[in-house]
Structure formats: C-alpha cells, structure tokens
Amino acid sequence: LFAQEARFLLAAVGADQVPASDLPEVAFAGRSNVGKSSLVNALTGRRTLARTSNTPGRTQQLIFFDLGGRLMLVDLPGYGYAKAPKGDVERWTRLTRDYLKGRPQLRRILLLIDSRHGLKDVDRAVMRELDAAAVSYQLVLTKSDKLKAGALNARLQETAAELAKHVAAHPEIAVTSSEKSEGIEELRAALADLAAL
Ligand code: GDP
Image (cartoon, rainbow, N blue to C red; front, side, top):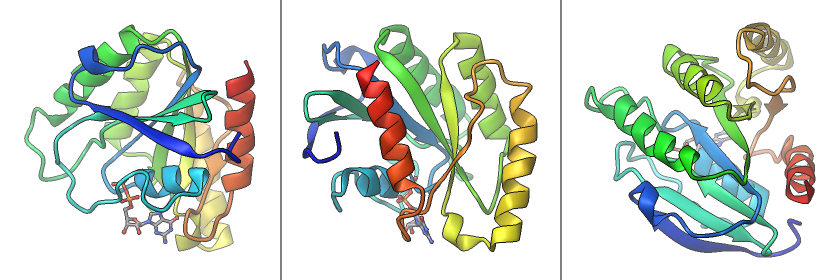
C-alpha cells in the first residue's frame, strides 16, 4: 500500500467540503505539536506531504490524502493548544463531529499522544467524544525516541490501564518515532489491513 505515492487531495475548512469518496479512511488526531504531521510524512515516506508546523491554532481544517486509490488518510486539526481561545475544543469537536457523521467509511482514528506527556484531560475528553460517537480509535504514543526504554514502558502500561474505561478504543497501543523510524512499518501494516477490510 505504501509503495504508492500519497497524493494531496484537498483541505476542507467545513465538513461540507469533504471529498465524496467511498475509499476506506483512516484519520489522525492529537494535540497540537504531538507529531502528527511528522507521522503522516514518515508513514507515506514523503517529507512535505503534511505540513509540520509550529504554529498551532492555525486555521482548523481537515486535510485529505489519497493513498494509491486504496486508502484515504485524513489529517484532523490539532487540538488543545494552551494559548488557543476557550472555544477551541468545542470548535474542534463540532468540525470533527460533523465530519464523523458523514463518514461511514472511516475505519479508525489514530489518536496521537506524546510519549513524554501521556494522556491529558483534553485527550480524555476527545476519547469520551469518540466513545459516544462509537468511532473506533487507536492510541499512538509518538516521539518514543525521547524516552528511555524503562520510562517508555511505564508510560505504555499507565496508558493501557486507562483504556478499559473507553469502549471504542482499540486494545493495542502503537508506539512510534518518526525521527528514528520506529514502529512505522508496524503501523503501515495495520493501515494496510484496514484498507483491505
Ligand atoms: P503536529 O503539530 O502534531 O503536526 O506536530 P509536528 O509533526 O509538526 O511535530 C512537532 C514537533 O515535534 C516538531 O518539532 C517535530 O520535529 C517534533 N517531532 C515530531 N515527531 C518526532 C519524533 O518522532 N521524535 C522527535 N524527537 N521529535 C519529533
């Protein structure tokens, strides 16, 4: 699946602008700066597909990439930027909720969590939202290279312990480093399985 070029399709600022498509879809979500753009780029092997940026709070949009006509990747806007206005989570929720409503082909949301920080309340709120919407999601601990093995394992255990409370969460947690290319092949394999469903 990842042997093919990922192609930028469009950026939607409203849920009414999403592409009409029935390709299986996987979306990426997470707090601003969690490493979402870096992960999309690492997975697709393209350096500049998703814009890595240090300007959280930029226009919230849904960015669609077509992977070889077999899988759609969707980069959801980052949430939880500390300096963002109060309404940020609500805005994120509204845009995402509207998107989710019209996407029966959505196979999974990858919910990225920074290995160094673990789950934050804003992540838990998003998880509850996805539980309520019955959207299947999987946690991905990013930037694994930033922690020593022991600390990373502790983070993994601690995060896994919370999953039981969340009905729509996939039981496995992915661990990745875009920098060191760790966990990337495994995640590609998981996405290929989802594309084949
Ligand atoms: P986004 O806002 O979630 O799209 O995050 P970015 O992909 O732009 O990454 C935010 C910051 O984290 C950037 O400075 C990246 O270089 C850094 N970063 C992203 N992934 C990794 C990783 O796997 N390891 C390390 N050490 N840094 C990373």
